[in-house]
Length: 183
Image (tube, rainbow, N blue to C red; front, top):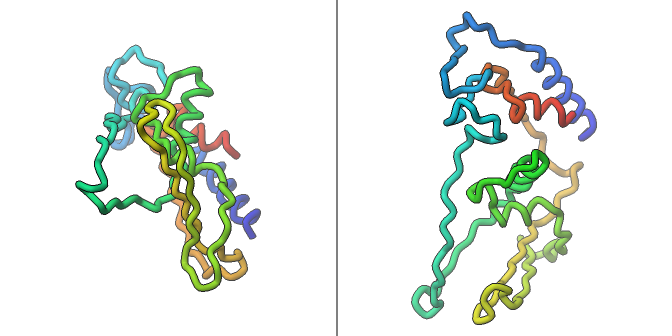
């Protein structure tokens, strides 16, 4: 079933990949600081990958004493998109912007093979404490969470909608052509 889905999505991408932007279309835009696909580059002479992308500034969280703030929360989102983005920059011989590097997403990209929870538990926890290499007075803590694995045959039906933007703004090498090259 997964192979059929992949082939279906590949066929859709290839079908839409032949669409072209008509300069007379009201959706077409051009400016002095845009590339041929209408992507803002900030500098008309820039050919740098990702030049029109925006990232948040990196701000390191301050150290907080547990006695001052005994409750801590964290997200259980397992996004891995930053790995692909960083790899894209590195494959083009460029240093990624610091805001593009999200350490938790680099780690989450790879399967960590944590054990499934026991029958009566919704999640399984895995963790370790280690020395902090850049500050020996601190420790690093890794917390791994594994939810119950549900076999594909037991998953409920999915309704997947795939929308591919083929407008002029998606024609730069790091957008629609990048997607097409992955198939």
